[in-house]
Length: 218
Ligand SMILES: Cc1ncc(COP(=O)(O)O)c(C=O)c1O
Image 1 (cartoon, protein in one colour):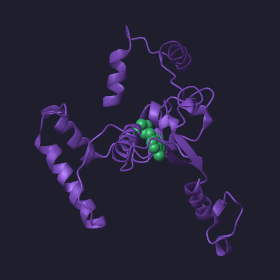
Image 2 (tube, protein in one colour; image 1 turned 90 degrees about the vertical axis):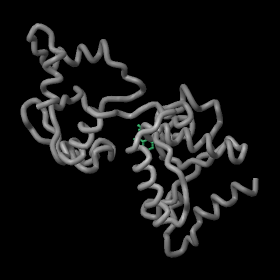
Image 3 (cartoon, helix red, strand yellow; image 1 turned 180 degrees about the vertical axis):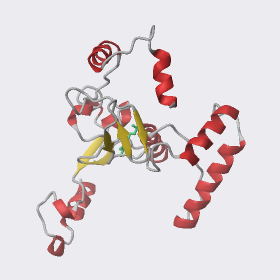
Image 4 (cartoon, protein in one colour; image 1 turned 90 degrees about the horizontal axis):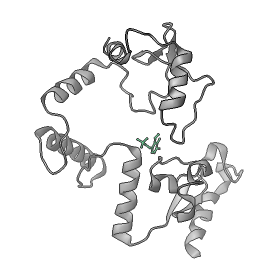
């Protein structure tokens, strides 16, 4: 309901644009970044529930990606949505110079859980997404070691910010932004099911680990 109402709000003079008109508006006004549409023409979805997305005709689509895992607990999850609404109404996230109870309690819960699983004490650094997490880990490594070149897996994706795209394997992401900075040395991913060296796990010893270790000799 809410999603539908929000769309209604931005419709002008009661005019309801069809998909063709929306696609033309998208072509003119939406940033494409460096993304590509998966379908031609791209598909519009109207709403989501549980594991399913629905298009304008009410046809349901099982979302096997669940918004790249951002919605792993299901779309329209009542408990999560209610908590989000309560918090947004009362006090949303604040600039990190200021404190609020939920931030501290959540950090403590995550840190204690990690400590119970891995035996390591730590702090929680809140961030907005994957690329920023990668950027911060690059900063941490650089700060701690003074080294700026990292190993990165071939086939890996780390995001579209400048640092993250520089260590992302696909040339498409690095070509214009990250390639020249020479931040990553790409190594094959150790995947026994489809071995990059065409070896068999029973006899490889594992060959990929030996190959990786050779990097440190040079
Ligand atoms: C493995 C991995 N790392 C990093 C990212 C980038 O995350 P974000 O889009 O939140 O910046 C993604 C996003 O799909 C990812 O799958």
